[in-house]
Length: 193
Image 1 (spheres, rainbow, N blue to C red):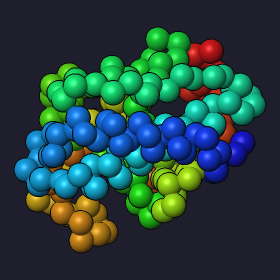
Image 2 (image 1 turned 45 degrees about the horizontal axis):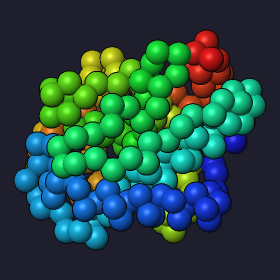
Image 3 (image 1 turned 30 degrees about the horizontal axis):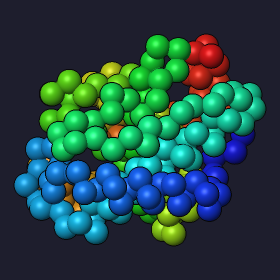
Image 4 (image 1 turned 180 degrees about the vertical axis):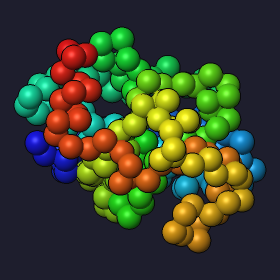
C-alpha cells in the first residue's frame, strides 16, 4: 500500500485557488492562540491543509479501499467551518497537514472544548513544494485525549524535541505512536465501507 503521493497539477491548482479565497475569511490567530498570522502564513497554512486532504483522498482510492471521498472546496464566512474533512461509515475524520519535516499530530484543546470533535485524526506530511505528501498515520479521538502515548502541551511549551513554542494548548502525539501499518489501515477503513 502506498503512503506517499504526488498530486496532479490540476489538483494542486484547485487547492491553491481554494486557499487564496478561503484565507481571506480566516482568523489571524489559532483557537486559544494570540500570535497574529500574516496573510501569507494563513494562505500557506490553508494550502497545506487542503493538499493534505487531497493526499488522503489519493490514499483511499488505492486498493484495497478503492473509495472516493469528496473534498469540501466551499469557502465559508469567518467563524464558520466545515463539519468534517470527510465521513466514512458514520465516522468523522479530520486531516492534519504538517510541514514535510514535522513529526507531531497536534489537536488544539480549544477546538475540542468547543465541540469540534472527530472520531479519527490523520496526520499527513506535506512536501515543501506543496505538490504532494506522505501519510504518517492516524489516531482515534480517545487516543489523542486520554491515551498514555499522547501528551497535553500548554501554550508556551515547546513541541518535544524542537525549539518551536506552541501558541495554543494542544494534545500531541508523535508519529511513531500513530497507527500506520497496512493491517491497521485495513482494520479501520474496510469495516466502514
